[in-house]
Image (cartoon, rainbow, N blue to C red; front, top):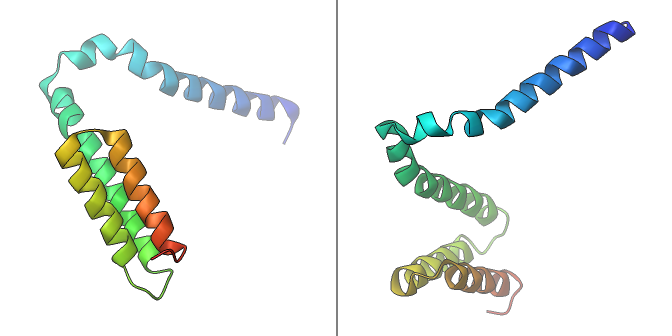
Length: 107
């Protein structure tokens, strides 16, 4: 490889990276007008959070012999507190505290 080839490759990578970062700001007016994007905004965050919880829960449950009970209890507590109080910080904090305490042998 020569220097010109490396510099052209770096410039192309920088241009693509910049374009991908700038695209949401450039297309924001257009995106706000479309029903499909609005529907994605309604359902996508919940879907992603659900997938993250399931993936991390199943992954962590397989790493210890006690089974999936700490993960299930923490998710259940978090969901219950969120449903009851509608305060995400409280729900996440309490669910995480229960999970950490249980996994460290406090229960």
